[in-house]
Image (cartoon, rainbow, N blue to C red; front, side, top):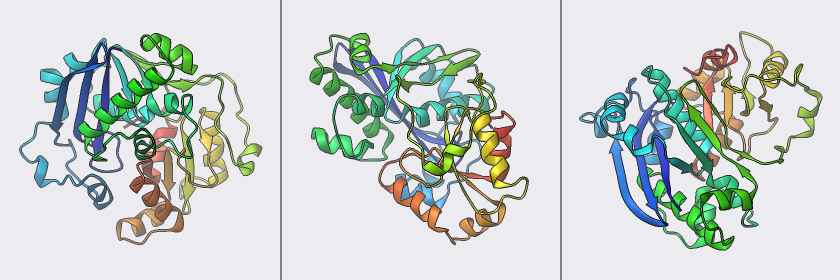
Length: 310
């Protein structure tokens, strides 16, 4: 098994706000190299919620390099052309795309897969977040430290390979029925569960996309959105329809499969002031359990609808 396990931690709800990165390279099934760096975000703001999760503060990164310097000097050579894995790769690869976009850097050429998807196809568990899977497999975990999370994802992949008696990565992908994602200079393809559709709440069934030909590079494509608070720019029903028409999914309730929670302007002001709605309290609970959900202010959601990942 030859691959590189990846994990990011971010300073705030923006996926481009990388504050640490962990990489673990496996060669022939053994750990070959480990890489960990603190990173100074371009917009060096740390939200209290993120600090509470990973413990990294603005002071911790004041002497660190920004991502673009580390990318050119160190990171690019460690991952370009390699097979990457991450636990909840949708989040970590989204972070990589967002921070590369932030610095106008071209995407590397690489393939990747997600150990959440692989775990779902390998073991029957009540939950598949990183803590749940590592607990099941007896893997030690210092959760939300990027290097330890990357190391744990790599060990999960190895144990899945052993369980399914896979001879290499290709064999494991075939036996789990998962689909690799791709990154390349002009875009990306997401990693997927082959033939498995995301379950939806009954309330979402009335929203049907106006097309079956989606732009897979659109920031909303393949992602699930929930909403809280009144939107100023458009009615919630119209916002949901635009998400669906971009190839995204609507979640009436917030659960472990929700990717974004869109917050109306007034609700977001209250949130920054420490006044949280029931849905935002649910988000913080899921984040503390190891799930990756991004709180998205209305202005950032509007940018996504327009096709901007920044």
